[in-house]
Amino acid sequence: QWIYLNGDFVRKHEAKISVYDHGFLYGDGVFEGIRVYEGNVFRLQEHLDRLYNSAKSIMLSIPHSKEEMKQLVVKTLQKNQLSNAYIRLVISRGVGNLGLDPASCAAPQVIIIAEELALFPKELYESGLEIVTVATRRNRPDVLSPKVKSLNYLNNILVKIEASLAGVSEALMLNDQGYVAEGSADNVFIVKGTELITPPGYVGALEGITRNAIIEFAKDLGYTVKEEPFTRHDVYVADEVFLTGTAAEVIAVVKVDGRVIGEGKPGEETKKLLEAFRERVVIEGEK
Ligand code: PLP
Image 1: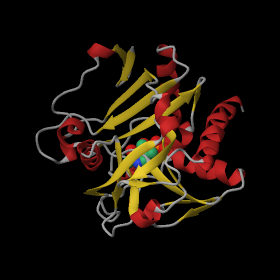
Image 2 (image 1 turned 135 degrees about the vertical axis):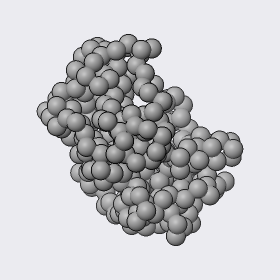
Image 3 (image 1 turned 90 degrees about the vertical axis):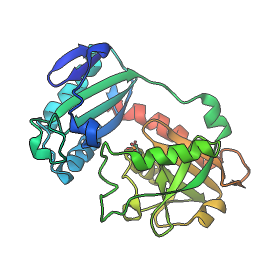
């Protein structure tokens, strides 16, 4: 496996960075997780737009144009001969001294990892997920916008820890006002009849590329999609609940905080949306 590291392709075991890198020391940097379907990088432009916006927000200047970055992503895939893959693009602030000030960092580091897909087990999609809500809150948009996909993922890691302490594999975070924000690395939707509802960005969620694709695909299929704040109660009494994300795609949730959702198995609308999603991601690449 070849890793792109600051201009060179190096072997996985040789892909190393300094302990003085501020990405390592402070989580100072930004990243993207991207999916490749049959050789087509899914919505690369959207991922790069989000990456560059995240970087701009934290005053990190990426040393490549978006066009160059696109080429680097494609080259990394070719070098690894992958057509179905998961790509991790990381830009860290770079090597500096032990102080927080990014001014000590010489240059950002650019890392691209492309790996074989580690798909979630099929059973998970057939049975659906049991999840909980946790005490960890999504950070307020006026502190550090949840739209910034930064390397500082402690909130999300705490969500994972709380989930596994509760014996489940995923959990939902609320915002500081108690509205449902998102999962540890995925967005949330509730279904009521043929209406889909997902929290708007201002509630405190990353603007997921998968979320936006599902909104688009669902509208094409005739669903009404609303971006509205909702509470845990709304989740408990929804007909269906599902999560979306680059890795998970669309996955049904069948129990939340012990409350059975709908009939306790993946709902019809969720199944339809997953099917549509899987078809559309391949069709997009053929265009
Ligand atoms: N929310 C968070 C916090 C995430 O890290 C991710 C994953 O990237 C998502 C949501 C889902 O976003 P996407 O669909 O772009 O992968």
